[in-house]
Length: 398
Ligand code: NAD
Ligand code: MG
Image 1 (tube, rainbow, N blue to C red):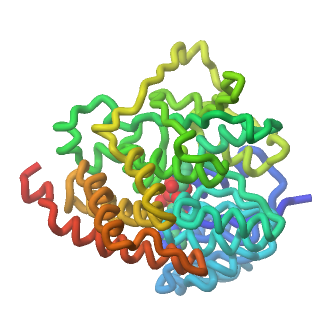
Image 2 (image 1 turned 180 degrees about the vertical axis):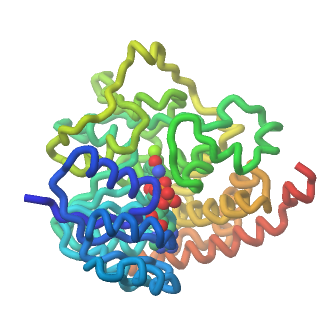
């Protein structure tokens, strides 16, 4: 029986890898919906190939273009946030949640509430509303399977073990393109240099997050929620080859690791087939060819993001959402060359500090999405003031 699947964010790096995996594995899958933010051309092309019931473009202004491209195809075209939310809960067996940014919050939660297996790539929904998201999935009889390589590794290393016997979760980090740069060099880094990740090919936002190591900071927060583990029991280990995807240490001193090539199709395959495994012609790991694997402690001075993530968690339940929003605003400003590379972390730190002093991080009330959206908005406004006060690299001539 073909599994019914919905792909939220099908035109992104994760979405494309998911369809690529379906193609390469010949997995029995019936696609109910494909969705994209604004890439009409690719969404139409994917829809003509995979024939979902519906294709949704989030930017409603592009709906006429999508309609035109899908004319006579039998694929229904829809646009806007409402259509996106409907696609998220179409009675699918499996939903890939791979929209980037806070735009993914509401559709991911809708998918969790539908009781489907949610393959979760969208970091922001977990960072901003993790406990609510996991609870919603549980209440609906569904399950959240993490798609990121690190939690996929931890998830696999935890299988069959008692959670109370875990002593540490160890998240590996490649260290990004600036691992061996000096602080002075990092101060002048350009967006092109920051996006060029040594091992993984990813969307621009997450590539910058890898360069600042904010990606690992956000992952630390996600791991704390996903595996119900205090942040103090989660550590980060720099491993430039990205072969050991993460590790779990147990009370008896045994440490279990999961290894694989840096290819997102592997964690996607695991999330798709779980609790089984997908038999597909995956590229195999040849450790003899790789030769050596190296590890080092993260440098908290050049990469303050991990410390910021720990601070965000300790400042209040709104801290992670504020950090995430400040970081998104700062990454956009960096990509637009309005601020320098190291200003991304400075913006996050100052935003957290200002919001903490105003008592804006502790507030807790009803609907988790409304709350996350509120904190997100305040953090973006605060970050934008902080960014405005920084000197742009263009002004300073770097
Ligand atoms: P991407 O930028 O390549 O793709 C994002 C997708 O979201 C696209 O399909 C885009 O059309 C859609 N989208 C963008 N804005 C939207 C909006 N406003 N409304 C609706 N849809 C919108 O990003 P990606 O690299 O595929 O990452 C997706 C998510 O997965 C992110 O949260 C990222 O942090 C996470 N993630 C990615 C990787 C990776 O290897 N790429 C690894 C782990 C986690
Ligand atoms: Mg990761």
